[in-house]
Image 1: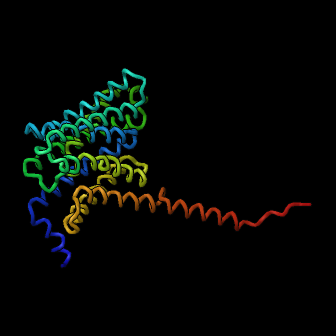
Image 2: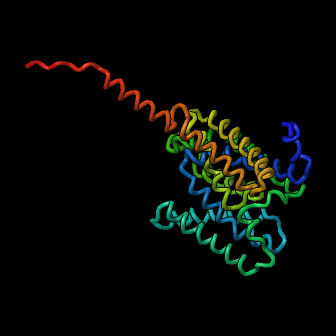
Image 3: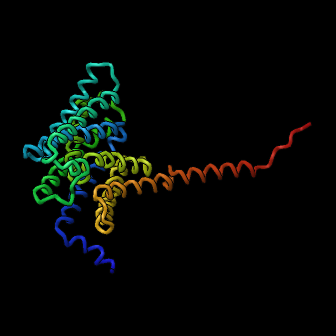
Length: 297
């Protein structure tokens, strides 16, 4: 099989073309948002929102409403509930997040277990990107475009919030509103990625691209470009791998991202483990080769 046929063969199927577009949209939006989540230390919040949407998705599925509506309502509700617990108790943020998202996730599992004949647990948890229809594709593209547009439009304010919240407040920015905006965009991003990789694997989509880009650069604008480029490439590689290897599409995409992270972790020029080991080895060699200074008796 020549290269051209190898590339074009999967694209002959409409469901695979739609899967590729949905996965690319979810991957790019998640990657851009993940850069801010990494810098703000909100990775656990991404985990929480991803899991907390399960009861909303289950209820929407049961009553025949769009997944996105139930997911967004419960995602935004989880964020509000976490904020309420933090502001009315002395519990730390990670504790409040853990209590809320595990409780909502358990509620979703309970709803699903009560109506097993009506709800496909595998599709909700792990995605069903190969079953996306044209209407769902349009929905994902529109939501993804809105989320990405808002992120880029408020890029300067959100970046200042991530690096120096006190300075952002001092120059007149409404930091509470910006934080709420970021959390709302996080909920929207989870909705976008839900069809592609599902609730559980969405956590990786919100963390791995930003973490990989962070190891490669200290420029935030470059970080955004690297994260988007890496995750788009991983999305394409994952789709093709799932087709030719007959494995789960969502898992394949996340594994591709993980492979890139491991390579960067080991071989990145500045922060890679191998390069750091070589620099330490070279330093020890230079020290050992220096002539010893005789001491006077």
